Length: 196
Image (cartoon, rainbow, N blue to C red; front, side):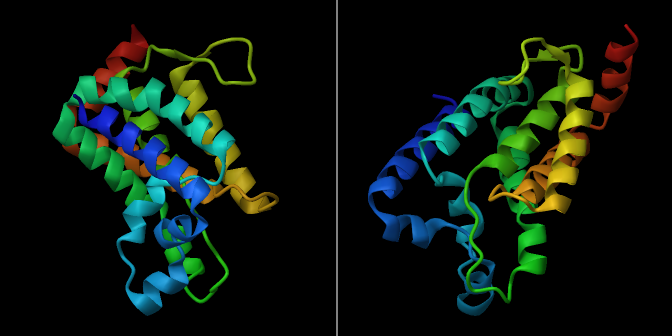
């Protein structure tokens, strides 16, 4: 069984159990204040395995299915793990920097890691097309990536909802950077495929 499938199964199992046990969800989510004061560094990883509700979980699971599973097939298990968990950790940088004195701030979900997997996938498969949930047409992957970054940046600046848009932005950029660091030739391959 692939490591991506194992991560997806663990994400589902922990999230479902945490829906029934709020104390477990509280223990696993990321609270930068508690990370700083109580050295709960494990939450930097465990927060990526729990979700706020069924919609959050299903949305992330679907995105994981379309990007993380094929990415592992492209880059292999070891590189996939570095991209996925590196993106998850990087997606927490803004929270750790800005919320470490706020005891009430909490964040959870795999969105940062999945954003990283998505951008690494687009780097390797630039000729693919992506159909967003709300759009009836497929968009070329590089254009989708630019729109995703722009929307995430704008939404993070607005701070008008409970979605951690900074995690999306930082996770996506981290996934791209890690994928390039692991395979610098991917840039020239990306350009060549775009030109063809």
